[in-house]
Length: 76
Ligand code: SF4
Ligand code: SF4
Image (cartoon, rainbow, N blue to C red; front, side):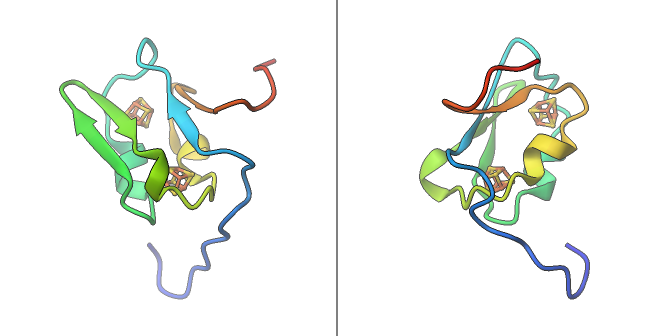
């Protein structure tokens, strides 16, 4: 994280989840998560919801749009 960069917690209503069928295991989400709550599981990444501060960074970082908010609005 860049020095002085503020992480806004709680932007999402629910912790997001990885749609495994779209995940390529690139680890961009894992590297950007300020809470360290994304883990590599085999060839995919997975979000551990208990540690998520709902900042939304992983959603914007994923190049494959594989991350969606659980119980959030349906994708367009
Ligand atoms: S950024 Fe997206 S494609 Fe890359 S590991 Fe995370 S969920 Fe998978
Ligand atoms: S929403 Fe933020 S805290 Fe939660 S998994 Fe994504 S990057 Fe990590």
